[in-house]
Amino acid sequence: MTQSVVVQVGQCGNQVGCRFWDLALREHAHVNKKGLYDEALSSFFRNVDSSKCDGEAHFVGGRIQHLKARAVLVDMEEGVVNEILQGPLREMFDSTQLLTDVSGSGNNWAVGHMTYGSAYREQIVDKLRKAAEHCDCLQCFFLIHSMGGGTGSGLGTKVLSLLEEEFPEVCRIVTSIYPSAEDDVVTSPYNSILAMRELTEHADCVLPVENQSLVDIVKKIKHMSHSGKPGTVIRRESAIISGQGGLIGAEKPFDAMNNIVANLLLNITSSARFQGSLNMDLNEIAMNLVPFPRLHYLVPSLTPLYTLADVSVPSRRLDQMFSDAFSKEHQLIRADPKHSLYLACALMVRGNVQVSDLRRNIERLKPSLPFVSWNQEGWKTGLCSVPPVGHSHSLLALANNTCVKTTFMELRERFTKLYRKKAHLHHYLHVEGMEQSHFSEALSSLSSLIEEYQQLDATKGRLMPDAPRLRIAR
Image 1: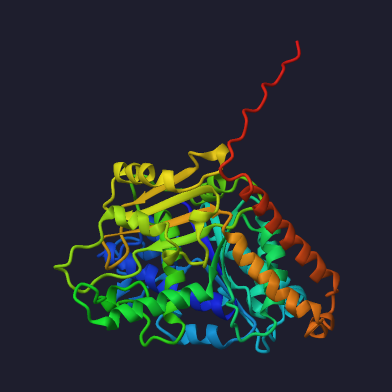
Image 2 (image 1 turned 45 degrees about the horizontal axis):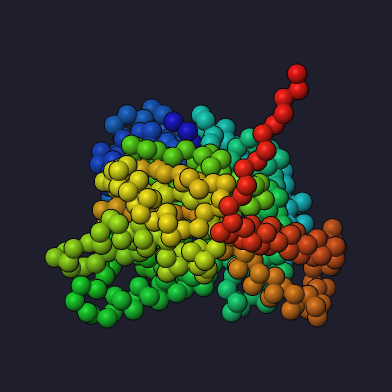
């Protein structure tokens, strides 16, 4: 059995991570009725009481016993981490896993990356090494952070480069929360563009999630839940946006949005945490979906997003679930993949679904999905037998699709509006080690990335001629 370590950086990273651990425990408790410490639990949790590794109940009255999350929590403001330590998940973490400061990064990438990155480098590396030492076979690091703030974008990408430096052979999958155009952090375009360069250079896979997409999904679900129309009333306790039934109590403003991202992580890690007839190794995601090292941004799409309350209404047919996964309404970024080019696609299915169902739906959908000519069969599939709590089955699609360039172009436009006026630039240039060249290099890196996607898009509908045979010298 392999293990993975989750690294949560900044306020958003820690809040999303907190929802993930809560819902993951809920899933394990649902399957593992006796609370035995088994292989499924060991993938993301470690048992700190070796004398009670057999037959010990770990889920007693909603409390966690003898389990520690395989996680490192970093934030330069202590508020969110302190809240976690005072909440129902407090027993899952100890001081060796936590790193906090009190002053924060002031929504400044340079402070997070340069100042705190240098000051806390050794402590971060030490905590990462300790987390890795507790693993028998370390397979993957999951980094969760936001792009708009200072700690998430700056220190988050610094941690990413340290992971590559210290553990070059271990896969690095990053979940990045991108700000919306109406973001209240005025410097978020600067932070996002500076972070983008680091993600492009140091990550194996990036799962971009847009705040605006999350807002739209939550609004749509809440509208449906209050519509009262027959057959459309949503069962609240099993909606993907609800944490009800887990350990965490009253919900806060961003909990519904954070839950969607946590469910993305639950689905991508399901094959590592549970058995299945076609389990997907986490390393296989990058191996199969990333044909070019820099083009490793995978568009996530999640379905179902809710469960209907009326059990007499038939649930959406399995085929409909596959169709939904390729519609822009279920994507976690605002773009339309069907009008862009697919480089590869993964389908990660949970529940009682057969391989034949997967194959049938891939054959059904293929004609409507424009794949790059040299990878027409670029599908990767995974089947996990354990569905999410409250659902009969679920599907996560990860598409390496050129539509992601739309998000990057909008980000570049917002950056350029600020940068043209040199607005707020002095806040960054006052930080030791930060130079104006960092901005121009980051912009150049993003423009180059967009151009690579555009060049691929230009080949859509064109079949590549067969490559000439190699002549073998005698």
